[in-house]
Length: 421
Ligand code: NDP
Image 1 (cartoon, protein in one colour):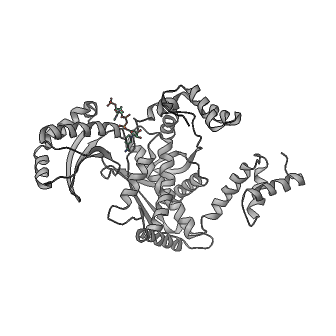
Image 2: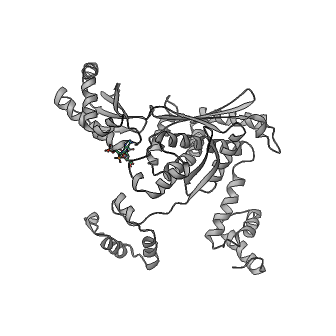
Image 3: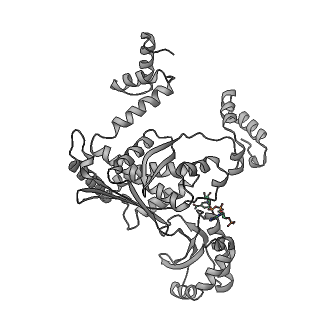
C-alpha cells in the first residue's frame, strides 16, 4: 500500500486512495460522508469522519443541594439508566455531597543515571525559587489568572532516577500543554545552570493533588426490596465493597463500573478520558495493591459511600472551546467552572458504583442489562419503534437471547400480524 505522505494529501485524494486500496463501496463512502464535519478536520490528523457515539442524560442527581441533568456519552446500554437509578437511591439521604481540592496538576522533569541523587536534590532545593520562576515565565498568562507553578517535590527513585515534580495550578484548564511547555523550559534551565540533563519533561496523569470526593449517606431502610431488608442490602453492599479492597480481580470490574459513568461525562464535556482513566487506575494502586476506588460502610443506620478520584479535566482548553456539544454539556449541567464539573464527575462515579453494587448483591445485573440488550438486538435486526415493545417482551421470554432469536421473534410477530412493519 502506498500511503506515503498521506497526511499531506487533501481530503478528496485521501478518500480516493482509501477507496482504491481497500475496495470501499458507495455505502462505505456514504457512511464517511454522512459523518464528515469541518471541526473534525481541525481537531485531529488524517481526518475522515466523525464516529457516532450516543449521548443521553442521566437524571435524579442532587449534588451539593443542586439538581443536575447530566449529559453522558456512551455506547454501552444500561449505563445511563444505572446512573439515574443510583442517583435516585441517594435522594433518600439528601443526594450527594461533593468537594474538590485545589486544581494542582503535576509534571515531572525526569533525570536518569544520576550518580549522586543526594547532591542533585540539594542543588534542586537550593534553586527552588529560580526553577518556579523559569516555569512561570514560560507561560505567564496562567500566572496572570492566579495560577502557575506553586511548589516542587524531589523524588529519588530506583535505578538512579530522580524526578523533579512541579505542581502547577492550571486554573480552568486540564493544563497538559501548558505544563509541558513549563517543564521543557525547566529542563533547559537545569541543563544550562546545573549541567544536569533530563530524560524527559512531561506531565503526570496521576494528579493526586487535584482530587474530587463525593459522599452520600442513605438511610438503610430506604434500600429494602421485596426480598431483602434494607439492612441486608446495605450489609451486602459493604461486603461487596470490601471484596474490591482485597481482590484486584474484583477491584478491576468494580472500578470499571465507576468509570462507566465517569468516562461518559468526561466525554460529554469534551475532556480527555484516557487521562482520566490512567489517573484513576494509578490512584487505585497508590498503596501498592490495586483496590476498589470507592468505600462503603454502615453507620448510625445509614449506608455511607465515598469516592475520591484524580481530576485531570478542564472547563476550557483542548478541543472543548471548539466542540459545540461540550459547550452544550456545560449548559445542561449549568456549570461555569472546572471545580463544579469535577463535583459532577465524581458524583456520577459514586452513583454508578452504588447502582452496580446494589444490583449485583440483590437481583444481579443481568435482568436490567438483558432488557436493554433485547432492545439493541431487535433494533440491529430491523425492528421499528412500533414493533419494539411487543417484540422486546417476547424476546425476553426466550431462553437464548441473540440476533438469530431476535430475527425469529420479529418474524413470528410479523407473520401473526401482531405488529406491522
Ligand atoms: P490548551 O493547550 O488548550 O491550554 C488551555 C488554554 O486555555 C490555555 O493556554 C489558556 O490560554 C486558555 N485559558 C483560557 N481561560 C483559561 C482559564 N480560566 N484557566 C486556564 N486556562 C485558560 O489545553 P490544556 O493545556 O488544558 O491541555 C489539554 C489537552 O492536552 C487535551 O486535549 C489533552 O488531550 C492534551 N494532552 C494530554 C496529555 C496527557 O494527558 N498526558 C499530553 C499532551 C496533551 P492562555 O494561553 O491565554 O493562558
